Length: 193
Ligand code: IMP
Image (cartoon, rainbow, N blue to C red):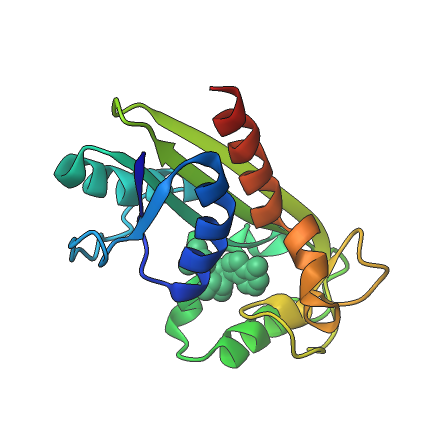
């Protein structure tokens, strides 16, 4: 069965293709499906944004569609950057966005934070199914590590032994992260339907 991924990000395409092909899906990226859309993420939550991206493609292609939306929530920053994680405070680089979080936490006792990933699967009949993965942790005092991307150099997951995500092997994230948890729920659902 055909499934279109609501992304052209090659990393995500590979990751999802590896997971979904064994379940019988023919996985296409947006551009491989001939769909050239840049959906505005106008939702107020990760779930709404994931749904908006998937629905826009479903309305064109009328086949299975998968999308995701994710980000970092820092408790004392009012759960920011949240859905604005990729463009926090309009800062142009990942390093500057990480430094803005560290600045915002200066003198704060509570450094708790979490990564959230919401995956939206729209089935062949147009019904949406949402799966949310949460990875709890804290924000480190300083950046460390070179693996991963985004906020990985400042995020210390509760199950990481005190290391930032960027200091651990990529394989750790593949099995423990917010994305791994959301995808795990998706897999359980797809296997059971
Ligand atoms: P997207 O939903 O994959 O586009 O991610 C949005 C933004 O959230 C990214 O640009 C990162 O800043 C942040 N983010 C999401 N997942 C992760 C992660 O696993 N590690 C670090 N940053 C992440």
